[in-house]
Length: 108
Length: 121
Image: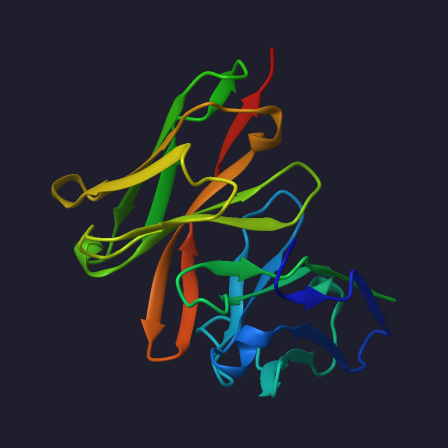
């Protein structure tokens, strides 16, 4: 079982804003990182830390964190954003790592 | 460019062993912890193991502890995952990833393309 909890499915209308959340006790101590995975491809980091984007990640992706919850926010979702999204952080022990169960994002 | 390339996957019978390799290039390999992450068919990502930048410490998921061993040879820019006593539930694509950590902020970047391990009789 995962120590990080995500909603399995989320949908958003094209051009609208969506938030994908990740909950876990370890998030009170460690920031989450977020990964996008499209079918048949390896995951790619899109947001990490307080609100950092690797070069190449569109600026419509952002992150936030409060208490035990981290959020990935897509402002103006595009069709190409349809994918599975996973959060990741160290677990409460600090020695192990955990992924959330993943959220399948559908862009309508 | 910065990249990781896995190899060694294949079909193996239950109870047998298999070794995976991960070769890094385009960065100072010896400066980074390296992890293995797996993904069973149609399932989510599962963290498996990590080795510290200098090889002095390793940590394992409960599902891997006692059966899997992670090691590294920085002269060859390579991390290994030796998997023993394999079972059907170990069937997955295995990815190696570089960990970049600054205080409490971490990310896995890049990811390799993955190597498929299939445990079947």
